[in-house]
Image (cartoon, rainbow, N blue to C red; front, top):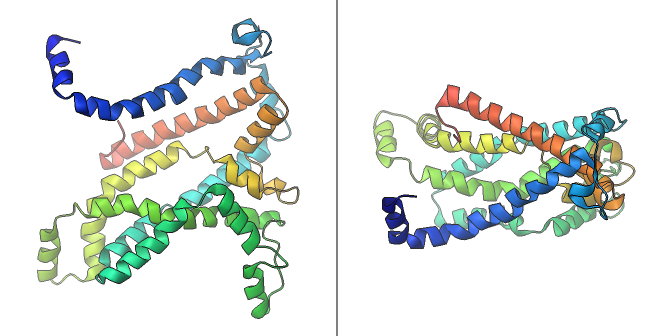
Length: 301
């Protein structure tokens, strides 16, 4: 770094100090652990250490590719992720709706109701889902019984698992996700709305032709980030809702890695499966970024 660059750092040291914790977080928890990725290519034995363990190349990957669970895990992971992606517009719709509310008190109430679920922990949320959807005492089945429908085993019938998982997750995150779009909407020039109103545009037309184009770069960036985590489903909630009856629909790559790595001690095999999953995410992220860059001129890099 030249003298000019060092002077700039000293002059703006507060800014660098402010960003330092975030940089340290990524270095410590995301980059330094990459050293251990090599156990995916070794037969790792704890007493021999990473360097001392025997090199086996792609054996663990081949074992996974030829296993009975491979296509089941890929299918479940892709279907749940695609299901979530279909609901990507929900926070956008919530933000556009909140932005149109004029009653301040009602707007604050709606914001609080939609934001609040975000602060519920995964464990508590899973407990609520189990309680609400219980076939015998759950409030959902009680309501269904009042309208003439029999009790439904939402968490014991595999066909219902993906819907329960995705919609409960969307309910928990849609309000918080709308905050980013509301911030982007605050940057839309109000003069555009005034001019459109004078030209006779109604509210829906102004939303479609002014608000949506105004936040489109934000939408594209968040869509790319979502695509980058397409195969990275959090295993905690799935694990808490999982049971032997819905296993064929709920078993995903992350839960498989958890069982093999932490419960069965197959560290090298689980590292190989996790690395394979991360590689797919990387390819999807790069592809989505390039497509967005060509079509919209908005991208991560």
